[in-house]
Image (cartoon, rainbow, N blue to C red; front, top):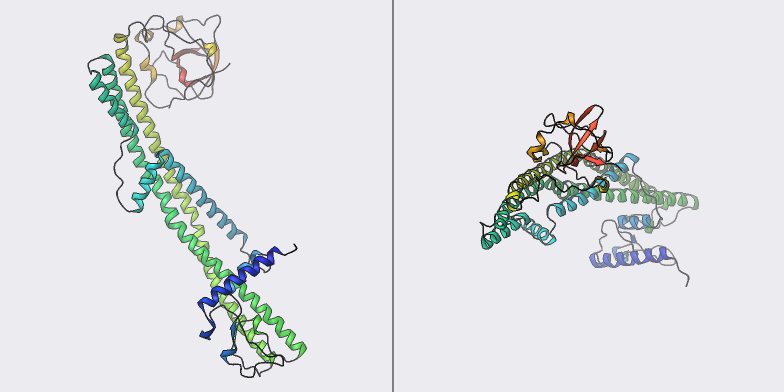
Length: 450
């Protein structure tokens, strides 16, 4: 079956718009709507002698809709925007799309539970205060405290549960503060842009699009009027075909050349008006699009605040867990003697089995891990330490490290040093050598190389 898909879609669109036009503006109104074309039917012998309103009928559709359809199918010319304007549009669209993605993923980071996110969304849309929700850490702390109360708070297990519960409660409170701060300083500005500034930009862009369609329709109308005028001049007087131009209350007995000349003048006037409105709307839209640069500056400031709040949160978590580790370490020797740090021969994994990626990234600037070293190592005389005949390795420094005392070796990020372990040392520490300098270094600051 041979058919033209473009023509079929175009005819279907024209049929639908005509049906809507008939319903909104019936012929009995005898009053042309804006943007509709009229046809004056004439008998085979010539024009209608009466030319009254009863002989008019609607045959077209709004010129902006018609122009848009023709542009989509490549049947009409389109007024192109300058390259700078197109770049502003592309940057605005990219900003909107990435802002939406960052906003959604940040919401997932702060609240992984999708049901809780939906509940918060509904409360926000209803303009009601979101009820306070217990964090996972606080809930875990509650369960541990209840378990310790039931199992015996004076037993070693009960005492440990209480200590861990207190630490988890502090972690939950830190998480709550982080979520609250990030929501105010980061999520709220992003939502304000999407729900405020972007909606204004979208509205003005739609107005600009409509102004451009009107401008293109006026250009096409003027082009057809000039072509018809030239044809009438060449062929002599003839009744103008009003189906090609806007309806006018012409006297049908006038010469076709004069009528087309008047039609050209009116089309040129409408074109000037349409061009003025298009230029004015383009300038308004351009100013809004250039404001995206200010939006980027604002989002940059919010991003810095988000990083600061996240840094504060993780630093608090680190301190809380470090305190908990010290509390548990002080009681481990009394509970399980001979099995924890402080024994004469602690179990230390062989260096050959250590992977370069096993060293966890420890946040620089926090409390020094030197406080975790057993008291016996503080008296270690490094000048008397000699490297073993075998077992030395190269290591790359991950972060800068400032020595806490003379027994430690200060480190600079990305430098290479030689490290080795000694019998009786804390497995979290190694002896590092750089040139003629020697001292203890924390394993968490190193990447052991094979």
